[in-house]
Image (cartoon, rainbow, N blue to C red; front, side):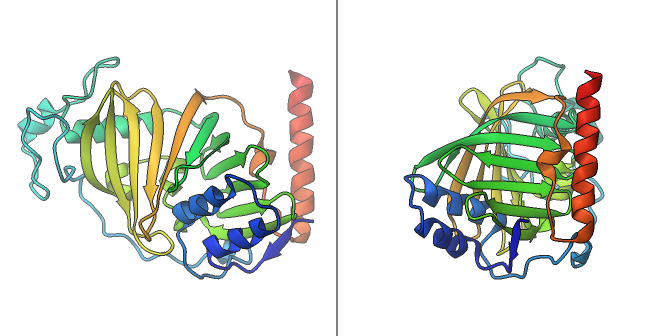
Length: 299
């Protein structure tokens, strides 16, 4: 059975694990976990239902305009707290499918980003993680809404990160251990919500252009350890998410580049299974295996 350990600070915990098996890119995994989960001592959840209540976020009547520079250089920056006139909102309507968003208003860019994330239930593909010191390690990403996410790192890394909708487990396949976190403490939790609204779920700080694409900058103040800064990068038409960058509360930047993304592909539910060490977990895993076998038999 997979072991469960009381959570220590994310960075020291992973560095301790890798001290026994140093690898060229192993330091990047601790940086990624710090970027994903923060770096602060906190007890792991004993079981999914044990998650503490979160303080209710201030309700926003409508998505506020992005702060900072506007999406194009020939338009004035949107006023941070000014409510756009109805005529302006109408003019800022998203361009048609296939049109570049590089000259669209910030509100329209955010709406298009929401539409992209809400256009799929499953997402699979590859990723390349670049840590603060420039080292790289690749892997496989699987996502299934609501709430399920998996990062499986390429060898020689023994780590995988799995979210089942309630908790996030950081597993070491070699040591056969896992550490649990609340999914609500991670800055990427919005990616796996059933319905995404960036302006509601996070603080949109800037919408801008990059060579060949669009950048949406966000802040999440509810992550473990403090505020995380998130940058999402899309192609100019915002048909594909190409990468994200997370700056953790300590200021360390981790970049995750995405490749070969596929929407709507069937994903095995077992990929997102977390064994909490309870009696019912074994039965739940067996049920998932039976469902998988039945699905394979029907193909």
